[in-house]
Length: 112
Image: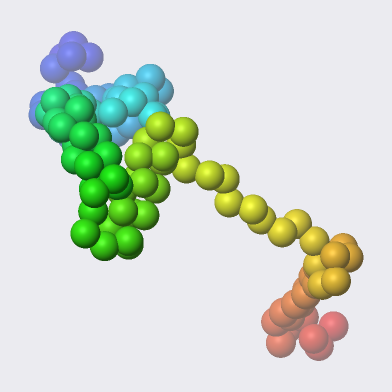
């Protein structure tokens, strides 16, 4: 029997086909086709959406609507502001790190 005939058919165990292989699949970070289609459809309305936000920012009926619209416009134009993160411990000192180590012994080891 030749090697090709001895392998199970259908990609089962031992067939050499199946499972994740190096280089297979969509590369990390690449968007799938559905996401790309949705983005393209949304971009068709981007101009109208920006005009509506600008209109609300200028002529909105209440202040919270105007502020929200202005923030949305700035976020799209300049990106969202970075969040400040504190990298120090209490009172501006170093960050305290506590390491706890637990040793578990078998009862057979305790007799030795």
